[in-house]
Image (cartoon, rainbow, N blue to C red; front, side, top):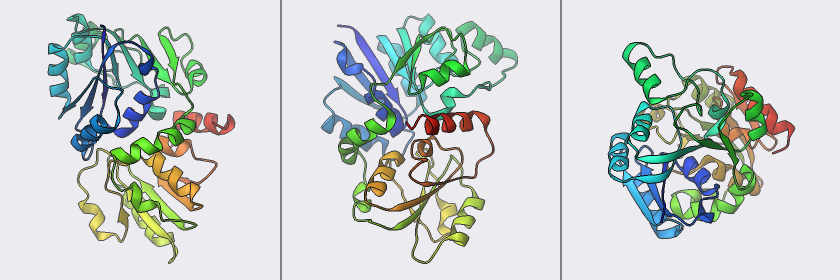
Length: 309
């Protein structure tokens, strides 16, 4: 039987994996959970308990352990969140896997600017192993799963790798997957009782933005509930101690949280810095983007809004 491996480092990526066609293939399926988000090991244990679509679920602490695991376990197909690493190119040259696909991870998949502009030895290594200059362009990549394939083709005319679509539109899939994810992550239950409230949420990047924190405090009303949802990879929360804000400290997926709050009649204001999570809910929330202007982000947001996705 052919072997496939799926790898993710935050809950959104696992959600996207489950929205691919992996269950339709008669293969031995391994799922690798990388420990880059809070309670990742517990998340992996919950998957073993509640998701029987996997033949094997493996928890690994970091990329180094991932590369070692792949080296000693050969796969026909590899599904990852990112293709622009020379180690993956080297593993391909060594025959560790035959085909590799990536799955969309937000608006970053549609960005036209270069990942980086390496110099010297790294430039040579990237060229030798086949690393591309943009996400999705590495020589060892066979294709991508995308929510907005037509937009991608417009962003990258002539793209010559396979473009696969997810099984269902993002928002449609969110509602279907919510029951499963309530088993996998803690603290969803804390929001079930919130109904017809005014709620402000700050979705952070890898770093906290003091301007946003101070703006929330300054402009909030007395009857308004204030929350900060740290990025899944954010570990140090010491800065938040000086602010009187509720912290959603969990591997909870923001998109599910927004669905729960909206369906209970709450009015939401969401502060963020070019967050993809917000794109899918623009028509239902007050969207305050305080990130630096990014043309490609605006293109994706406008496309979703225009097509009412």
